[in-house]
Length: 353
Image 1 (cartoon, rainbow, N blue to C red):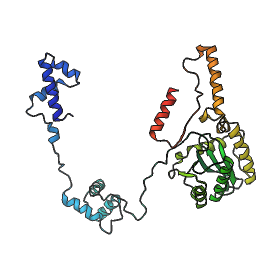
Image 2: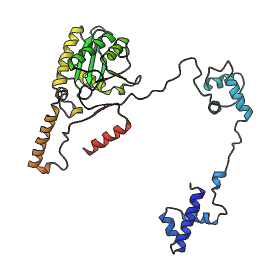
Image 3: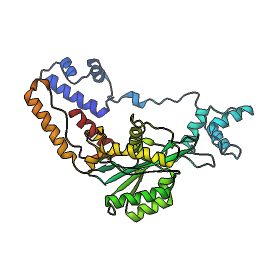
Image 4: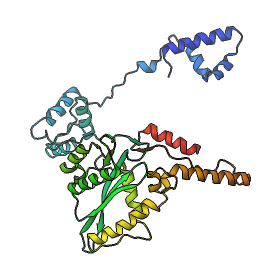
């Protein structure tokens, strides 16, 4: 829809063009304007679009008296804690009909009275967690706890895993008989000692479980100078690296998950599995080097050698490659809960590769 000023400007330009010898039909095709529309503008007494002047009032709309009755009833003591979906049937039981449920909502919305009407806590807005980016090992950690079944039905032991997001290296793990903030705190202290973590060096991301937010764990993180990051409640996608490593560990064919007799047996199983994960498993997210190699900074030389091998193979038989060789470029940045702009950039990089 064009406004009056645009119509006047178009008519002026078209008149100048036709006076200069241009055909009106050709002008309309060039500016994508129907010639019949132009003719209607030229014949009209006014260029004002009359559709904008039309005001329609439905004949069956609620009167002001009915609108005030809706507001008055919903604010009565008997109905002040009920939603319109509850109020309308109650009024019908009393032989009263003022308006439909949607009419109640519309009137209350216009009166700014559509809100949480119960004594329970209203829903709270949930914001995405802080976007984190790791460009080297020991910058961003994530951690979680998973259940391991025992031979006693309904009884479990718990595997604690701390993962370096950049290298995918499991920097710390342990199996305990219970979930405890104290166990997580002790494990975090041990990791900081072995990895020589300095204050304000690492950000630790986790979900909102009680061991993660326990006072002992939070106090330890503050004393160690480790920044905290938490997922949104009930959103597992906010901690994807931890979920992924558990999926890999539990579905390892050579060491299938089984029921354990006690904590000691579970620890032996986890020790073999995590040694394989760190030192033998070629991780697809880091160009198929092992987490231990990437954590130690050895992946640069390994990927460089792979690229050289592929370049030699291409030079020897170039007909086998219609495009570039396989991408062995080291991944410089790893993002945890990235923003949409970062996701778009990463998608474009993958398409280009």
